[in-house]
Image (tube, rainbow, N blue to C red; front, side, top):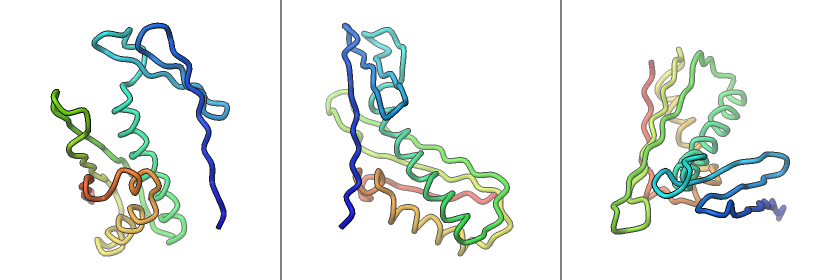
Length: 134
């Protein structure tokens, strides 16, 4: 079995934020309530990671299946209560402009979820997705 590894370094900013190094990329997280609001919240980063995971898989599948797609956007949202520190629900909508059949597009959705690292780490029981063909 081939093992894929991911290494991240995080450095405290002296308040409540974090400087993050991922390979040669620098990221920042912070809080908009008691920090300097100099980066997205970690929960927003998690939802961003999910959107990136889905988009990469959609892109790969569109290329592999030779589908014609004019536009592709993914919106991800989630919510939590103030009392419980975990996202209770995560939803995403794929907006796609294509002349392909709904059946082909739903197949892409199914495969993008099946092979999504972040999607499967979070868990499909917590995520609800739908496709809007434009």
